[in-house]
Image 1 (cartoon, helix red, strand yellow):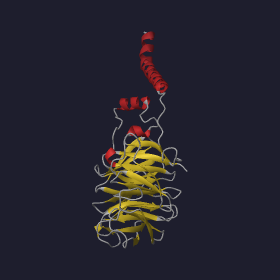
Image 2 (cartoon, one colour):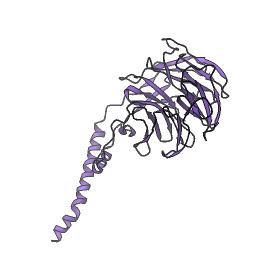
Image 3 (cartoon, helix red, strand yellow):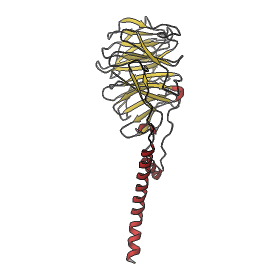
Image 4 (cartoon, rainbow, N blue to C red):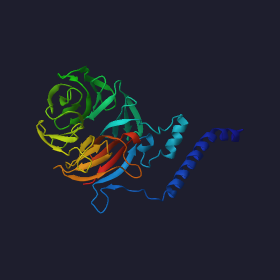
Length: 344
């Protein structure tokens, strides 16, 4: 009787221990078999000095793990909980920004902001009643989301809780929009820049409490799309109708253009996403030719690339560079975000 009770009590524990031991053995076997080195991609390629290194793709939950797959014990734990690893979460990504351990991606097909969290190795969502056409994040991790259909700018805290909103009316007066699109926060000055296309064709500038301050760019803009700032406060706009990049100083005074309409290096057919690294290099995505061109701070073409082999870019949209000089590329029809590291 005593022997029977011991076996009954210890059987579940032994089962769990054997299960874990088997899992650990399988992990060791898989690690031992992984002898093929991972291909490293840098741009521009040799013999030129590399300026950019490919890091990883973001398109599913497994991409949050360094190995590019959920660890075996994690997969087992999900199985026991009846939870599946999310294999594909992006449908039609358009814009991206990042803060701390989170990457935020607008998905206009799902009407959501998809949140990749590297700290928790999980994915969450922020539902957007209107189509999420723009996104930005400030120093406190507050998230600003433009709703293109409802004409609202909605503000959330870093955990996705709604804080407040402004806009919601069509027009050109304070608190009114015709088509909010790209957004960026000047974190040093505490300003929110909103590209407002359609009838207004301007950059509307607000403080971070939602108070309108002033407009810039009406004299130069016909169809503004995306917007970026550098560490000196200069403002960069991708102008799709003129097929160029407009540059303004931190006070909103027009300085110059970069590039022109054309199909050669240094020119654009459909400029989209734009970003600036800590050295002032300017990255511009062309949604027509699916190429990213990199310009010096003075506007000279440095290099370009068309994606990481074997899959080239397919309908480029937003770009974003974080405080660690990581470049996030929205590769829309490939349903992914590609992440690169700027090499100083």
